[in-house]
Image (tube, rainbow, N blue to C red; front, side, top):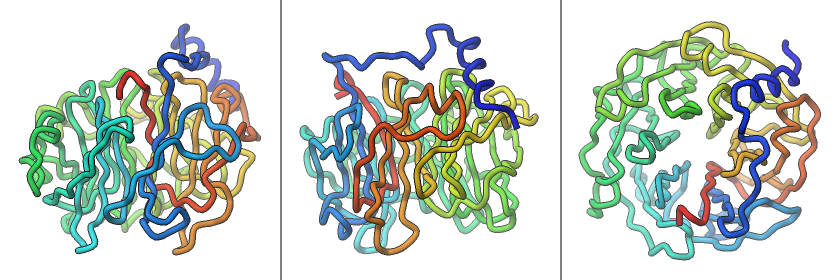
Length: 347
């Protein structure tokens, strides 16, 4: 296992300007949106909570929005937030919000997913949105153009550019969970896919450009033996153009992988850097200025923990080694299923 200091060295060499020392802009502040799982836990009807960044201990949200179903995750594309989940009728649906949330009208649920979405990703400079979905056939990626998602306001989703059939993934079994990340240079999509037949998830690397054109393209596979089954919502981040950071659901830690190893199918694992928190986290987000790492955990029980569900870390410290303590914690009683950041200029 490589020491975390090797991670920091790789970042400095690969990106001199880096994303380690960005300053929070006073005229362009950053925001964090927490997608909350249920409308009936902790904060009552709050399904979305918007915080100004950086987080401070016990910080309250600036804006909250009522849930319109049981939310499962979300994605930011340009000035919009797309939230997916299940309606009270049991249908898989998408809700569309404008950012910041204070400007958003009440959304209407749109149904029509081919499967059950478990993760989403914005690619092609925000012009295309991809969903990772569980299906009876295993698992697939389904993708829509941004313009179609925001211009079509009917009760059903627009026709996908990337259909679930065209985006059917070559998996060893039925998809039971996973995540989606975009490489630092925007050229590749990383898919974590947990299946019913493997104890460790598969990592699949795909071309973002090919997906946006409506086809799956070549799949590069490898097994993430450092990870166990992904039974909860799962979200990692990419840092600069060299690293993929994934949460370790089994222990409070961040796992580091090299982009080049993932795209080539070779050994990509670098290190496991522990976090001085409890319990383990399953969601990560990077602040828009590359200074802070935000982490959250989703409760595995029907009753969320009274432990703060959100934690903020100095990214440089996490890169540099194990045992990093949070700068701030908040979000008691929440049950996050998504962490999404944006800046005031996006809204």
